[in-house]
Length: 448
Image (cartoon, rainbow, N blue to C red; front, top):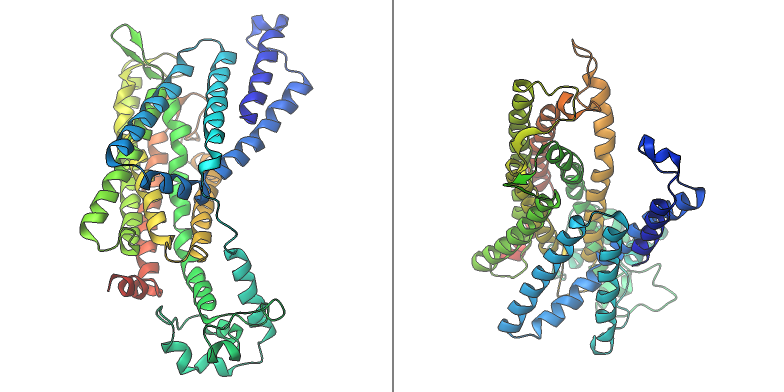
């Protein structure tokens, strides 16, 4: 709510404080308004980060499991309807302060409803931090670096319920001798930073094995960033009318959201039908690969649509102009749906692959956040990629960049082909990492 209120403050002050510069197409903005506006940006990031926590998702899952099938269906339909209304109405308002005011009012109402049921929510005590476990294992292995006898311990290999990892064996030094003799022994505060359990060491090994796999999500983050940038810019240059009614650009984004939910639900249904476990790590691995394929198709379709758009630009000689291209913006709907589809399957697959319902304190919960962190870095990296390609493209024969100020003079199709090539290479890297690490044996172990 707070970011919305702050942005409303800036927009309301800015629209009311109009100077003589209105004739030139701009309004004066004071230093206070700039401070308020840019202060809202980190608050938005902070609020979005809290919203993505798994604690909130588990709370929703617990509440859904307590509902009947009919009640659960009605609640999901209600969520879709309310989301559609809250998503479309702000863009039908002409004044910007009301566009900000409407979602802020929705946030106030949603917060009030959420807090009204706080007394009925289950409150679990602290269950341990995976980050602390990672540090404990690293510190213990360093402090006990002179202990090499545990590395070849046969009991260490056979007494653990998970498959023993032959990689990162230097971490086995963190397992105390008393822990090996008595697996049920609990560590006290005095030796917990010098002795770790066998299970904790194996969990950290799994984290280290998964880090290279998570790095492949970087390219997916780069691709997903085009939804809020070039997809919107393309649609803004195209025909937005259906008959005599002008359709807001947000309809394309809403189609992407619907596609994301549908693809995620469909993949979840397929997973439950063909796998033994509801959350199978094998389904997670396959789902990540499927999302990469959909991302590649999205880039290819986007390139083809941009070629068609530029073809109309050449026919009607719309270069160096802001005229509308006589091509419906709904031609961009397939690429928006593919983009939302790959994001929906990716989110579901990450949850399948990294979550461990049998052990909520498992380090795999930490890896979920790390995976989305790498995906977010891809969003930031897209800016660097565009800047690099903009410079490299000027080295061509004509000396023009792929990214001009006017979209009709740009070559976004080339950029989409580059993204498609990077995505194909990313699929190959993912396949190699899956085959060359202990990930395949672990997935097979769980399937058996």
